[in-house]
Amino acid sequence: MDILKATTYWLKSELFSTPFFILFGIIFITASAGFWQLGKTEMARAYIIPTLVAGSLLCIIGLGLFFTNKSRLKAFEKSYKLDASAFVETELERADNTLKEYSNIVFTAIPIVLILCCLSLLFFKTPAWRASMITIMAMLVVILLIDGTAHARMDEYNKQLLEAKKETKH
Image (cartoon, rainbow, N blue to C red; front, top):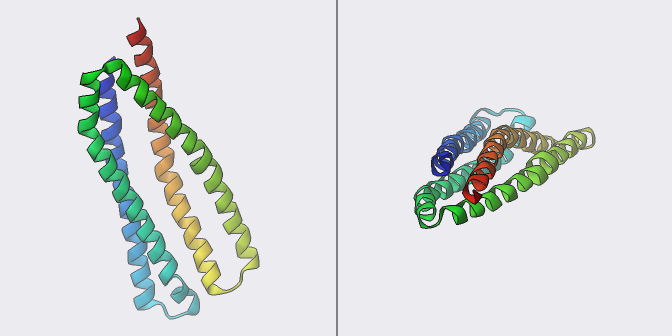
């Protein structure tokens, strides 16, 4: 198994998916501008700030992930050429930590926050609160969609790293 090829494939897949954060961020920012320009009701006007904040956060997340992963592309090759077994160990540790973070944050904390936002809609009746909770829910759904596929890729990559670790011990 060529683990460098698998690593490069995984990283390029990540580089493909992270711009979706930016795309959705732009959609949220555009929606904010639409609410600002066309919003006539109090509820529509209440969405201006929450969608602008959510869109900005999604763009920041997307840009941060994209440039971080882009810089790793060359570093992976250098690291692999220096010491392949150390590279596999380091990547395996990083992949394990990332999978734990997905488990704790993406698949535990985000659903809890979604439930709390849904429940808060029963208690908060003001347009600003309702718009904020609905926008938070929409942003978290976007994060779940994108990170759900990223988790699947990371899980597969982790399995390839485990296989490569077995091969390097023989």
